[in-house]
Structures are given as structure tokens and as C-alpha cells.
Length: 349
Image (cartoon, rainbow, N blue to C red; front, side):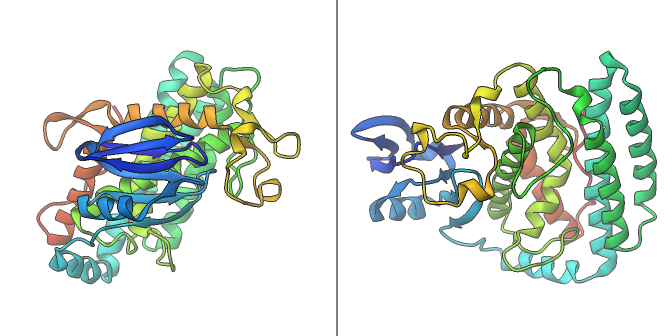
């Protein structure tokens, strides 16, 4: 199963038999059998006919709408999970402060552990003292997680870990023309932050799809607060995968020269032809730097390749794709709700 990303502005998603076909100005850009598609992600100004919408609903294909720049807008879902008892348990269990804190600690510990493993791998060659200091800081923070008794305290530990982590991230970027001076977002203001934000959006979509498959409510989680329109459970479950599936990928794309400065532009300077069909957005005010279409397609391709990479998944004792690992972790949380097993975060090796 795969995710069909449609990024060409002004293109149309059509149906030919049992195939989904992307067409622009009479030319076929993509064609894929529907049974191979787990999700369709429409980025920007993409046209859908009523017949295609009906087909997507009939096939149960999760359809996500994003702005061209990766901002989540909404999704088209054929039906919610039919397992009402599972969702009932989700609401009951998460209403229990002790259960909620236990799950939240697992998410934070998983994220901090994977952040530390990622930095340690990068530091094996360069032996940077700042990274060594950050590793020690994160190790101490991991030891504090189990003693956190409130969500606010736990989020403080997570925030301190993120500060230590991104505080030395610039040391692992090995190209001269791309720099990183700390995490920023809403909007991101430099190439690395643009890629990180896009990657986290793609990861959230992948996790959201697995949550829908299992039949959980994506809007009720344990770590992230419940707010109108916020998929808190999705944000919870993706925490441990941020270093694994996004941060490492961004570093790979930049250091290998796959994504370069030529793949970005600043809207106040120029407006490339790739944006002629783009939706109307306050680009100049909201997006000081933007990934152009060529760079977008390159990064999405890398992300899909990463999701389809196989890795050992210890709970099953077998190799699964990362997409399969995401699904198994969601199922593990469902088992925690049912009291069938504990939740163990996925760990980088």
C-alpha cells in the first residue's frame, strides 16, 4: 500500500476503470491501481470530480487536503471505525489520570530516546563536545520522565530535551550553503525548518491513516491537550517517530545534496512558474521561504521510500516496513486500552 501525493498545481485526479489517474493539460502524469492506494494526499489546487469523490469513498481511500505549503486542511473519510467498543474504552481510559500519564510518559521517553540515538550516531564521526553535552543532558532528562506526575511537568521535560537536541543540530549539517540556527515554525524561516515542518505534516498524515484503520478516535490523546480540531492522539503517537522518520531524512536530503538551496525561494524576490496554478494564500506574509515544486516532489519521494523501508520490529520478531511499524504501534495502544498488553515505544537501533 502507498500514499498517492498529487502536487502539480492545476492538475485533476480522475478515474479510469479501477485506476486513479492524475491529468494536467491533457497529459497523464500518474496512474496507479486503486487497490494499491492507502491514502490520497492532495496538495494545493487539485481538481476532483464528483465521480472520483464517490469512487474514493466507495474504495475506503482516506483522502487528505493540504495547502501547497503543507498546511493541513481536512480529509475525506468514507466511514469511521465500526468498533464502537474500542472508542468507548478509549474515552473511559483516557479519562483516568493515571492511565493518561502512563501513556504520555511512554511517548516522551520514546521520543527522547530516539533523539539521543540519532545524535549519538551522528557524533560517532565528528565527536563534537556540544553534541556530547546534549547527549548527557537528554540522558538525564530520560531518567526524570518516570517521576513526572503532571502533564505540564512532562511537557517541560520534553521541551528541555527538544531544546538540547535542536541546540546542536547545526553541527550535523555538513553543507556550506544551508545553515540551521534553531527550530522555528508557523511559519518556518529557513530551508531546514521548512523540511522539518513538511516532514512532520507527512508523518502526521501517515499516523492519522493508521489510527483510522484501527478505529480509534484521532482527536483524543494522552500527552497533547484536547483542543477543537487538534488530532491529539495522532500527535501523541508520532512523537517517537519524529527523529526516526523525519529528522534523519531531512539530514540525509541536505547532506547528500538531494535538496539544495536552488529548491527554495523567497516570495518577495520572485514567483516561479510552478506556482501559476497555486491556490490563493497570503504567501508573502506567512511564508518567508518556500520549497519549490521540484524540491517538494523530491522530498515526498524520499519520505515514501523511508516509509517503505523494512526494519526489525522486535514485538513481532520480524522485519516490517516503517508504515507497518506505525500500524503496529497504533494497535499496541489499542491493546493498552483493552488491558491486553503494555505500550512500548519504538526504539531506533
